[in-house]
Image (spheres, rainbow, N blue to C red):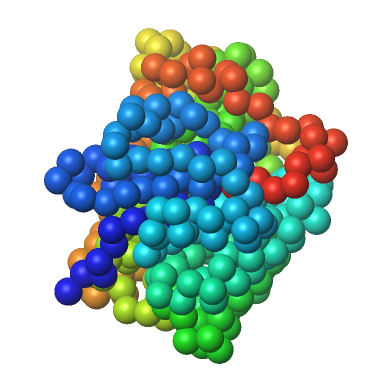
Length: 350
């Protein structure tokens, strides 16, 4: 039997993946569920991402900080929450290198405060959304649910710590939790600090396209709509304490991905590809840059019947066309200056 969820709390629901999850759930018109979006509305939040479902009677928004236990508990009690899915996090590796303290505060302390709320409301089920970056870098093979943790950036370390907190609370306090680690997501509404929208934005502005090192770092790309479909299956069907790795089965080097994206852009705009390919420039590699990520999602496929539905070619085309149709939104996205990051208490967007 699926887990009965009448009222769902979504932390960081104005962020890229969180908002995609909310749109996915509310797209199911016959589903009787209350979805409460709990978000602080920092730089990575976008009200546009939930504009089409904002008037759905099943949707509610609460502006709040996950570090504020009182505010979280008020939302849990007010809306009779019986499950929570936790997206709220600082996620950009470059930002974590520039200002690691913010990542420790949001990703570790924020998760801790939510788990403390769960201790006070132990009937809730809690799903924690994490990343494959906690496993470090691969030379061969694939990450799976039993891979050792070897984080190589402050961001990855903060997410690894939050994963360990979730596991420890489930074991020590007998709480109902599940956990997932995903590969690199892409799709509509992703903030322009991330690789694909950043490259598109700069290409459209005829700016240089900075690629770290030689561009040979490999990532496994997962279309965001496939990811949130997997999360919904886990939320409904996974037994307490289960962990799943979620991947797209689409490995590409960063350079291969950027070149393919630029070729698609040129095709859509009926221009010569070389016009955009000539914008690629190689810059000094970032510290601790992981060489390769790849995910084995066979447990998820075998137990819950999930597998990616959108291959990389189709997903890139969908993503590119969305950004071209929403250029104003893309150009409005600005990563915060370092001094603005330091002023922020917490970011509730993934």
